[in-house]
Length: 290
Image 1 (cartoon, one colour):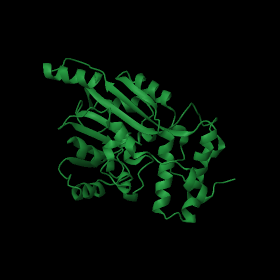
Image 2: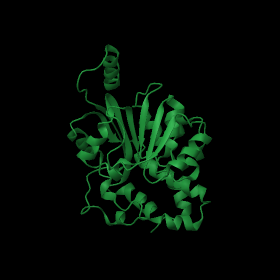
Image 3: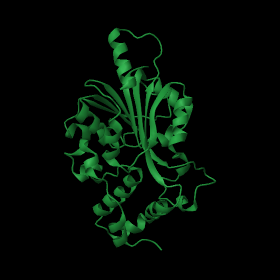
Image 4: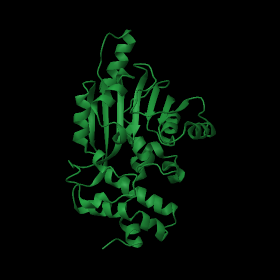
């Protein structure tokens, strides 16, 4: 029997804000992009990802698959870095206006690009690449990752956080309940699982993987997102009906496997070729091992 609205309100779990001190000054709306439909996790996931980025003021960061740019704003605001904000579906103009309104016109460059095609950046240009809730859509091949990683400096960090299943699943083994979606998430087989992504990163031959694992809050990020969206919608019956497919999947995942969750991966680009200075060597080693 499907959960009632009251049952959803009482049983779906919220994220504990104290676990994310980076967001202490953020209202709940801001964490979720003021209702602009950020992917599950919102800035909770961004905060967790940045803990392993090891950014320095003035670094140049590629925010790949940035959506409406909330993650780009978070990076620029908290780390005093220059961000190249890249997305395919959201226009550069929309993001540019948003960045200017938030006081970050000069430190975030919005571009509309397809990450499946060669990117117009110099090799070894970025100090870090940040990819939140996007890599599963386009980056599930060695060749695409190798093309992308050409733009990352040796010793630079590649940090990914995205939706996944907790264990191996294929199109043939995917439970029927996950066949029901709103169309946007219709390709669940691209979510994979943490070990699958870990093996892919190693297969590039360009990365040393530091971490690649399911998050403790991985499933909660989904449930908290449902609660936030329902709150924004005033818990109207139409919202619950439209989101029933996802609600049923999350309830299914409480007692069955596989279940929907999230993982974070941090990898360091292998050192290749001579470094220019002793300072470069020290920075590369710091990035690699800290």
